[in-house]
Length: 276
Image (tube, rainbow, N blue to C red; front, side, top):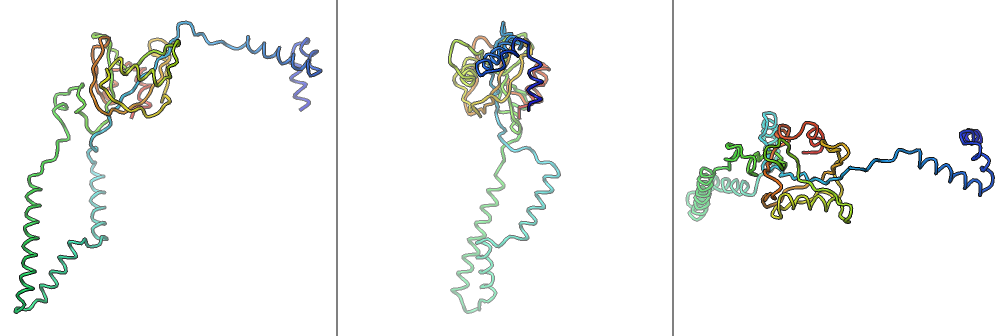
């Protein structure tokens, strides 16, 4: 402890060492040291820097993904094991009881024969109804018309995957980005409020979303200006539609893979880290 104090004293200038005696002098010496650190530290250059808050709107998958061959084989195995180890259902127990009664029935027992015959008739009718209903059932298609037309503005596409909303300001510009807004330092808005304002100003008030947290999920330097920072919020699409403001010309709903062809490469490198 004493040796470390000596080394510390040796690093101080002579006039500071002289002050390092009484309590008052010790206080003065630390004040001088703090004064040094203030001027020796690198001060951030805030001139020209801006802060933005962006929203990554996700439309979550609507249907499950198509099963792989391995998943199908595993599912079949699970069904086989479940069938082998499962107990009889109430209907199966009742049917088994009726069959046992039918085997023991006597020719002169007409009342029992009528009861069993009525039960068999009802069961057969029920099975035929179920079979007919199953034949007429048509499952919804996994691929929609929007998939066939490759309509990037439609939410009814890529139902098995997550879609992300991107907007574009200038018609001929290749630059696409999530909706965002600039932080105004003369207001008391939080970053989440700025992000919500940016979404409303860009996409209108008819688009309803749910923020996943009060804190941003990521922050990055703007690819156009390294002195600018963009904070990102992740939100889930609930209902509504996009009604772009006059400042924007187009919007798309794309997967993470499709986004790579639209977004600046450096920008995409940061976005893909936190997108589903």
